[in-house]
Image 1 (cartoon, rainbow, N blue to C red):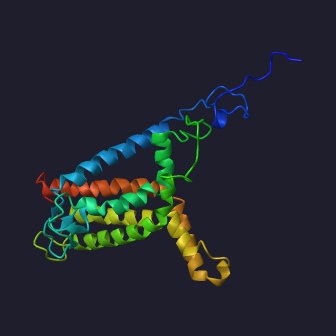
Image 2: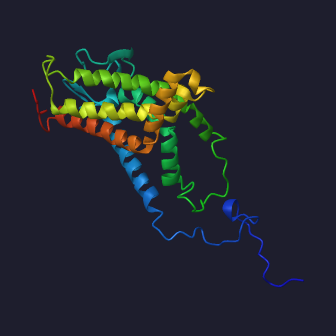
Image 3: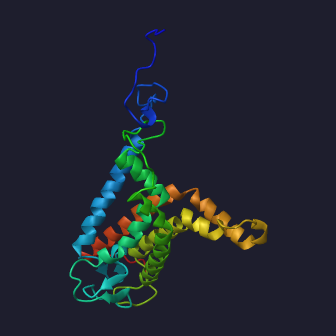
Length: 274
């Protein structure tokens, strides 16, 4: 016999499906759960806007001895001449647009497919989900099993490319210990900026989940591989700070590029310590 208290049929799907608990509210949280995804979205959007502007600008990216990390290595024929710098004319005169577009795809692909950044922009831009214990607005969920998100699985290959790019940026950092006349044994404020940037980039790259798996993820007996086990432990400690390193390195690479822009555009001269 009907009592009038039976749950009404529902047309929603996901967490509001008829087979789930009949809770009409999207969440029962009373804190400002929206703040974290909003700040994340704002931070990522700001970097996307800035990096897009700098990538297409194709100017003010080199001031001896500094080269912007957005343009290194410079792979096109239309690059500025950098003495002993990372000039590799792999693309001829037919490449007429910014050479930054040839190299940024690799660190960008590494970060876009990074496990932390996936979580960050899934929540920040797609609200999938917007926060813990908050229902997402999407009616269907297929995870990363369908195109295009299934391409996220190539993250491990972008890791190898990111290591090569980090190696080139390390070379650029070494070259920053020259003066404007390319004489060695000198250090400017830019050298310090580059040092901090490359340290954070390497820390972020090595703390990657793919690196941790490569170092020791396939081992069945750690006792038989003490060296790899120790390396796996070191990478694991960095991996615990992967989120912080992701943001720190993102900021530092932007600061390094902006510093080169200011010096190259003549806003101020690079202060020299010795």
